[in-house]
Image 1: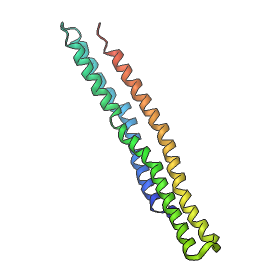
Image 2 (image 1 turned 30 degrees about the vertical axis):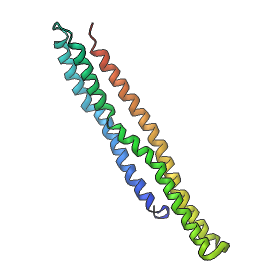
Image 3 (image 1 turned 135 degrees about the vertical axis):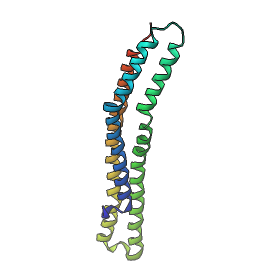
Image 4 (image 1 turned 45 degrees about the vertical axis):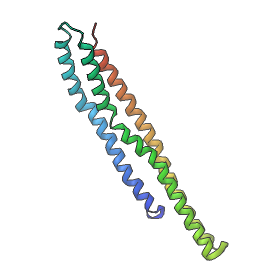
Length: 160
């Protein structure tokens, strides 16, 4: 971590925040949301039996609430995934500044110092890219799960 500079610590902190969000969303989709949906299905059984045209508005509102509950917090995850490569790039720039600083002070005759700067430059870049790739895959999985759950709820709240 120290070899990559302070950007690595920022990436590590954001990684912890991101994976906490992912696990919270998984817990929410498997434990909390099914109870909320079951309550709506029970209410729908009562509402759909009553005459009127307002049932469609209630169904639409419940589905909008469900979409917000399922996918709303994923926006923050998208922001974090977009930040990972940018912070890696920041590490690259700061590492290259260190390389150029060594070149300015000692000339091109100190390859060991230059290699240390290049190492410092590439490490956060690689970490940012790895985090972004894993973040993209996990976000896609969560979004698919949210859409599938929402489609199931919409099918269960049908009105003839």
